[in-house]
Image (cartoon, rainbow, N blue to C red; front, side, top):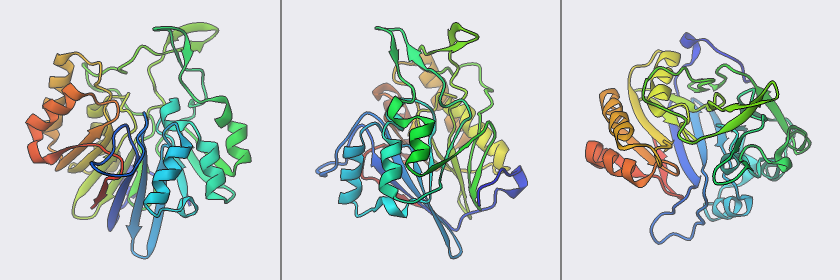
Length: 298
């Protein structure tokens, strides 16, 4: 049963398996299909209890389902869906995926503001948020049961969402000029709906799964540590949205991540080549580029 939890009640997993179902790039010599976007399958185990969580769905259901078939993963095993933020490359096709899961009342967890208008004006006006085919109504018709709130949501003992991430650093930014409407006026969108999933694995520490890290990966990591009361980070996986970041922000991000000392980082999608290079130089064999088909077992 899903419920909101306090810090002391997060709990621990016995083990965690992460499968990268889709990402911008693919493993060398694989038959998987890449796409601009990410989707992860998390399999958390605590005793005899196992929960399988789909984190984001990319933007192309056909490619995602193709990869899952090649991986011998049936959509029917999925117990819950987490949408890390509103953008189409993480949410497009969620209604179709719920139909493929084929059950009623599948929990879909996201920030309460995920369905707002979200758009860019460069190089031209374009909506980049939730698309019409994945509206509240379409999600519910497909079998989804929406759980939208500002705070964290515990999915099982040892796995929680971050909820809205506290902005603590003075150098991290959204990473793209996004707009929304407030009171009928166009304003900058600070992407407060950007959430991550945090797993606390016994004897290892925290594993942080991000979509795009619009809240800033250092902010996310510090927030996760405060939320769980755990000071050790086992790993970070996902997009870090440093692709258009200035060099000084990239270097500062890598410096601050080095201080947090995760055992490994696996970053791709919107991270950008420059940031990947800096991460490799700082972490060496502890860094890996994110790729479709990867599996990590903790």
